Length: 330
Image (cartoon, rainbow, N blue to C red):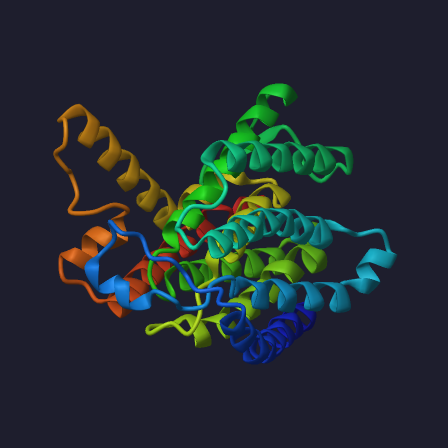
């Protein structure tokens, strides 16, 4: 199964790289340029017009690798890799609609927050119900490091899980604010799930296939997305990634592991919450120079390259700790 995972990573990398060569010029022709937030760092204004929706390249590259290399598993009735991909794809489609509206209307707002929330929540409930029906998800909450499980009423678990998914998806979306950041951090998360899947005998092949393919796709996308970015993934890509991370947490039936591997996503979200809450409580004062966290650090003198390196390194360290914490799961 390791051979299959490595092949998936390599195939997705090549496909995504090739797709990007053709996609970016087409996005430019469509004038699918990113509108930059007016309240963002002033030097980001120079990024205006950079093609967005570039996430399409790794969505297609990953999907092709998953279908081609996972076909035999599907014939045997193993669909976990397909379910995770399709779930992430639904979120990618929500993001695509959002991006398309932004591009057509030439502003930095697409779908309303309420529209996004309803669509994301519905997708989460459908996915969780399907995984439960296929007996791929239990209502026993696994607790890392102490290697124990807590049984929770299914309805309560469903509500908990749905909101975890929606929160995770939007946290990844929030992290996508500078060149290469969401891409590099999520690459590390995908490698974690790939290695975990390979060592998890019960579902080794299918479980490792999707994260391996997405890791390859993200590595190729980074070629186009590192600073200075030739394209942005847009909500199309960031919501797809959020869906992928959240879905894998539940596909592996250990969602609490997302606290560790998703530490950067959580830090970004918490910084935004603190900023908004402090602003309202103090009637206009700011806790951070700018939120989310990566913008605060930018304004503190950090370069985009340094942010990507440090945030990816933190994710790597936390992923190693997470891996050590789930050894009793195998």
